[in-house]
Length: 92
Image (cartoon, rainbow, N blue to C red; front, side, top):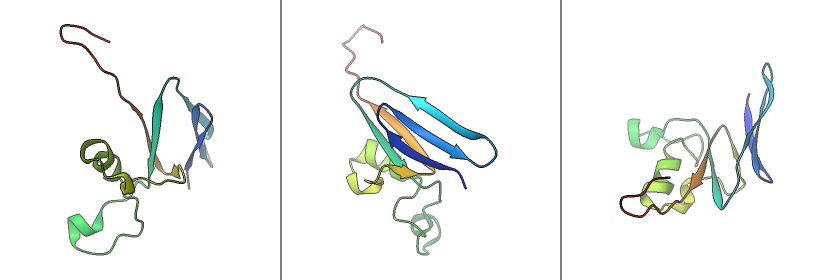
């Protein structure tokens, strides 16, 4: 099974067939990790197999639910969260 883990300045992805891959980033960022599992509680009304379902990244970024992502910085789904203030009539 593939796995993702936070390392200094990168997310490391390990896969049995594809080997190790890296996602590098700079600046002030947060890395957000969940499992790539459906939120069974919300969708089907049945128990989740993990507390960190794939909707967790949205719940963290959009709704501020800090408990929705894995604090151990591991999982099978990850995002690098950049907060970039952009002034009016400007671009990044």
